[in-house]
Length: 314
Image (tube, rainbow, N blue to C red; front, side, top):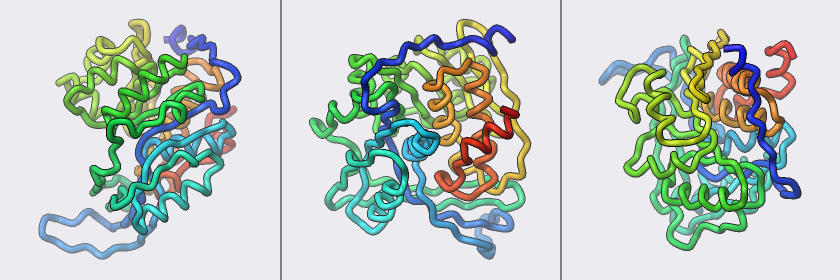
């Protein structure tokens, strides 16, 4: 696997763009309840601690890239409620352009209740998203999305994601996707992606196989891009040009796995834009994701760049 480990993507990033990363997708407010154990059906358990944090797949990944020094624009939507005010205010504390975040009249912002099992750090997420936050015909702004080098998506608003990916391709941008649910018509979106590293759950659902290696090969039939999979504590793996590279998990004292996948994708995008090798990109993202599990929350768990490099021995 040494050849794949050291292989480079060889990307010529377009020059003269105001942004390196443009993220379009979810933002959310997470209420995190730390429990001594998950309650049994019909049972009760006392809450040990509560944390309120900003989250959302693309919002978190975008924030990481911005904190690490990239020029980032985040495009998304919030409701005009108290949750939306908190979410927008939290996004505005990040060193990225959030001028393209729309406030949707009458809509409720996305939120989640997250139950964290303190002994293991594993979480169960209960979430809600107002359908009025979806982009309707004519609402997506092309100019907001094509001023970067890479577009990062989560695919939750699938119709809008497909349109955004097409525009990005026309503008000579690369497109990455963090996706965790199989929806009807998802094949069209996958065919537009240059870097696809979904969760193990998505790979298994999409391929119909519990074997992740088989799943990666099935995925590779639907995209000409780079394909990988995040495997939680087992690490990550990738299939590229017929070869498989496995990156083992990094043992940490986990307190909350919320947002680990979001952090992985942000770190992977950062490493891509810094033109690192395939193996280095995956190890860097894997390390950042592991460190994020040692703190509460999605954006609250983003480790510093220095901490990630230190753990890697860089």
